[in-house]
Length: 331
Image (cartoon, rainbow, N blue to C red; front, side, top):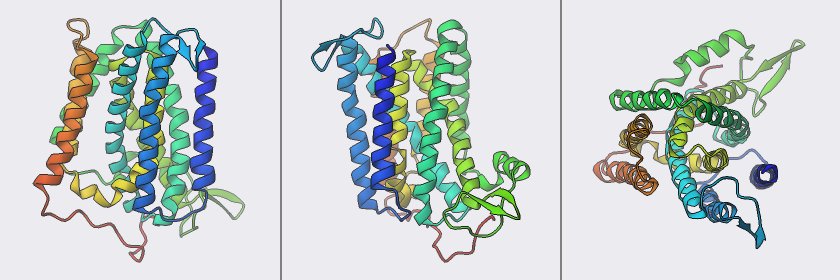
């Protein structure tokens, strides 16, 4: 099965090189139209991979007989991948909200946001790979881990129901600890992530933001990875669905950036999804919910959250984005 992982890794590296190294290598503000096109491209690629998963698990790929990764049939594997992809894409929206708060808190110039997301995505792919493989290993060997993951997801979802306002990322423990332990240069240093001052290598404001973005991804991975392990413990399906959701995160951010204030009911929908998945994990020995039902519940919750946000708050204006001329934020 090693060729399968090598082939997928080569595909991801190629896509990243094309998207981030060829089409978006210069620092500039990404337009809503361009971001929308790229979001459609990434969603199309992610959904199209469902067919590839089907052919792999049926034992046929590009007309060749291949070794099946597991005992899953093609249709079952394809449904599990699609459910996992929709789940991870939905949960990534909450991650986008936090990234937006970080950019506003640090007054990151719109021209440089793509650069932060560039390195943030690469770091997230590496971190998620390690966490997914580790989580799959634990679940396969220790059944009781399911109950811990399920209880954690249910608790997180219930906590989201009671959250009235988003925490200021600049006041978070992670940022305060990073400032205390790492040398951070004062002033504006453009798009540089590090700078040499008096013979000492120091982080710039953008460098600190990048660390914060990576830190928030680790925190959100603690929700998303156990959630998808509730759908399937097949490492290849878990990894591919998770990575394809991450790859579209950059373009999706620029699409949602101007509409952040309009999705105030989406957090409730995501909280419901987490409680639902947590309950499914806690009851996995008692009752196995059909995967098609899980997919319908996840899609239905997110759809209701989006539509209720757009329709119920139609007359209200979204929160304003700070302009480039605003006073500089944290150094």
